[in-house]
Length: 497
Image (cartoon, rainbow, N blue to C red; front, side, top):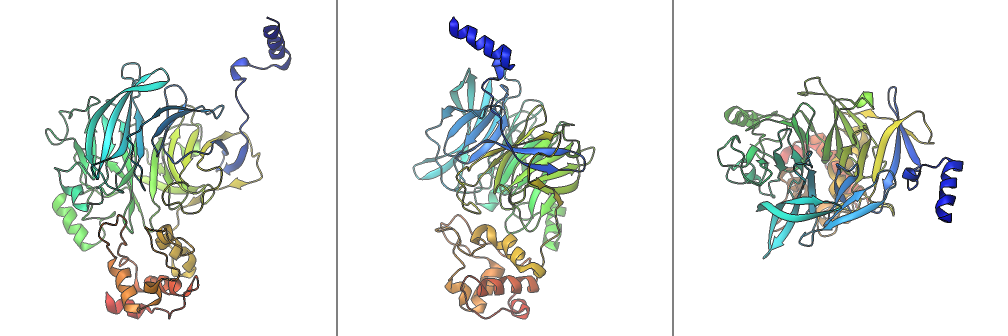
C-alpha cells in the first residue's frame, strides 16, 4: 500500500501519465523540409534482421516479417518489439524466406493474417501462401491456401486485401520468363483468391486464380482509397516499373520491358493488347515496397504513392492525378541517408514508417551496427535537428559527363562501386581477366549478356546503351581499381552490334 501511495504522489507531483509511463522519448535524427511542411525523421527500432514487410496492425502496432522466419509486433511509442511467431519451415537463401504479409482489415469478423514464404522440399523450391488466425497475442491454426513453384530469386512476395475482401498475391516469374505469359502457370502473375483459398467466381478466367499476367518480379502491391491496385516491379537491366492493374490485364513481360518504345514491342502490344506502366525507370532503381498516402497530415504528399527503393537507396514520392490514373511527379527523399529501403507503411494518423534492408543478401554497402532499422517520418512544428534534408525531382538518365554515376547506376548495384562484386554471385571487375583481356570478348558480353547454367543471377544485355555510353563504361572499368587495359572506342562497339 505504501508503494502505491508513493507512485500516486509521483504521478500527481510530476504530472506523469501512468498510461504513458513506458513511452520513451525517441530523438529526432534529421528533418525534411518540404515546400511548407517540416518533417521529423527518427529511428523507432534497430538491430532487425531484414524486415521484409511492415504493416500497421489493428492493435496500433507495427507488424513485421523478418526474412529468417519471425513475425513480430513493434510498439511505435516505446520501441518495444515482441515476437509472436517463428515459422520453422521457412527456407532462406538470397531473396527467399519469410516475405509478404497482409492483415485482414476486418479482424473482428475475419481475424486472419496472410503470409507468403519459401520452403524447400526434396531439393525443390516453392512459394507457400498461408493463413493464420489471430488469437490474443499469437497466431494459430496455420492453413495452407496455395503452393506454387519458387526459385532463389524472382518470387515476388507482396500481399494485399481488396476493398471487397479478396486476397491479392503478386508472384514472380521464378526466373523463367515464359511463366509470365503462360496462363496455366501461377508465376509472373497477380493472383486473386478468396480468403478460404478458393477461386473467386468473377475472376477473368473461370476456375483460375490469375487476375493479371506478364510480370517479372513484383516487389510492391497496394490499393488506394479509390480501390485502384498498384504494383512496383523490377526490370532486368532497364525499365523498372510502377503499374496500375486492371482485371485481365497483360503487362508484357518477357516480350515487353516497360514502355512500348521499340518496333518489336509495339507489334507485340498491338497483337496482345498489353498495358504500359504508369512510370518506368532506366537506369533501374530496384523498386520495393509501395503504399498509398491519402492523408492531409503531410499535405504535399497527399494522394501519392510512397515507394521504397533498394538500388537507389531512396524513398520516392509519386504524386497521382485526381483520378489516380497518372503519375504527375517523382520526388526523391532520403537518398543515400539510410541505405537500402525495403518496405513502407502508414499509420491512421498519417505517420510514415520505412524499413531498411542493409543486412540482406546483396547490401549495397556494409551495414552499420544499428541495421536493420525502422524509420518514422512524421509532421513537425519546426526544424529541430542539425541536418535538414530536401527532396529532388527524379533526374533524367545519367550521361557520360559523369562517368562515376553512369557506372554506378548501371553496374554498381551488382559489381559494387569499388568493383569488388559479391563473392559467389556477381564477379569482381577488379583484377578481372575478362575486363583486362580481349576487347572483343568484353564487348560481346556487354552487348549480349552472359548466362551461366544453374546460376540464379545472369548478366543482362546492355545493348540499349548507345555506343558512346558503352565505350565510356567499359573504358572506366578497364582503367579503375588497379586494372590496366587499353580504352574501348565507340566505333569498336558499333562494329560488334
